[in-house]
Length: 427
Image (cartoon, rainbow, N blue to C red; front, side):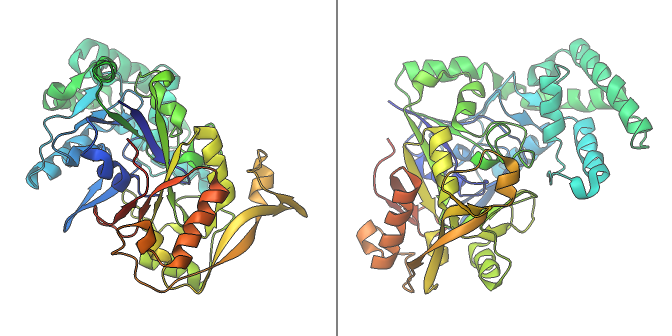
């Protein structure tokens, strides 16, 4: 049975939650392998809408075991709040598993995140201010706090004190902020130990055993390919690896066990935060996409920047992730346009460029070269098969598939769980 990676093929917010939830009834485990509560998924089940920030989307499927892998950074307060909110709505969260090796976001991480962004001013990255970057930085600097540290007060105190020795110097001397007391941080973190203790285990062992037993495991990335710290539009990126390789390091499952890699694409493009965005629209079309698509960040609450579909980015995502399939979302949002522009290449200093420039300066100056495709006016939200779509909508999907370099195996035609056309099975 397969192990599947499902990830964003643009700048995030492509609709990964819906895609994961669609597969949730067919898989045994859904694993978040990177990121933290800086990413959000909206999942619509019937007339119920769920906004998930840290928890895997599979938590809404009773037969599925949701897993927070070692590559995730966990804010325990956010985790418990999300669990409580779901429990109040009748969702069983008892099957959740959390890696003991996942790193914890502490109060000083969120403080450092916010004051650093303010200090940068116009040069700010556009972080969510939730402490994600500083937590990953501590992880790499080997002064991080892991989930398992909650269960050993002595180790926890030593690590917190060591981290604050440096951070308090920076807060006081550079940012003119008061020092953070280690005792207060330790006391707060220890308070979470009993509440999350039953969820914590060796998730790497659990997942590999599950694959040995023929179980289906779905690895769910947060953010998107172009926000990957290595392969994205650096420095306007997240602090981890949402690309397919991150699924292995963030879960402890080897690459030879991955069978399929599914990229989620919007039928247009959006981005949250700062950084280059060649097809961004600043006119009525951009506002219309934002309004009809409900383009506001689930976690941040910020309006998303909107633009036309960018095939250069899609091809890049296919290449760096080894994509086997695409799930095209929000096709219904494009209903009503007489003609729909699609970016097929860039113009950079008078040159036509069809692949993503590796040079960040070139990408900043890239101008989209558009091909105009005929639009449609028919309501497609009730379409159940590809043939139910208007001819122009079919042609649009086929054109995007050809330009992007991997087959489109599913199409979202509305926000609901059942508003999806399945062309090829992912399993």
